[in-house]
Amino acid sequence: MSTQWRTLLVMMRPSQETPESIDVVDSMTAVEYDVEEQLFQATYDQSSESATLAVVAVIETATSKDPLELAPLHYTIDGDALDDLFTNSINGTEKRDSTSFEYEGFEVTVFSEGRIEAKRITGA
Image (cartoon, rainbow, N blue to C red; front, side):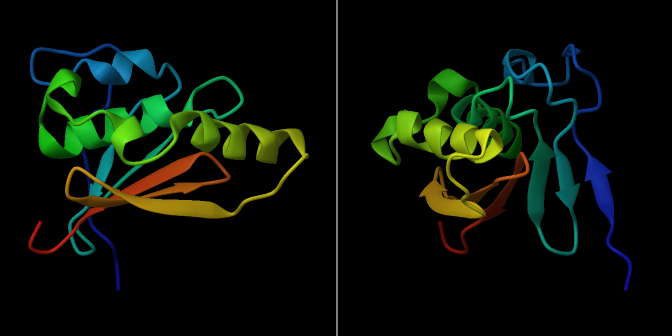
């Protein structure tokens, strides 16, 4: 069973058709969409980038909203704690495989290897 992926953002610098926040996450070059799973996915370099900014970039792409139109992430999760969880996991001081939370109608999962997945919550 093959999975179909559609790349939503393929360039680091935005064109007229792409959201601009991906620009704040230099290591994130694309947000992909799995058509069968209805799942947005992106990777970022957690050694140099913030997990909170990466989450906002993925959700901005998934919703086609300007980041200023999104609810502040800190209403949902402590951004400093989220960043610390995954910064510490690459430094070897604490290992966390993943953490999940709801944000803007999506279940968002941040993985220790620098991957973010966002799946729309049915009925949200």
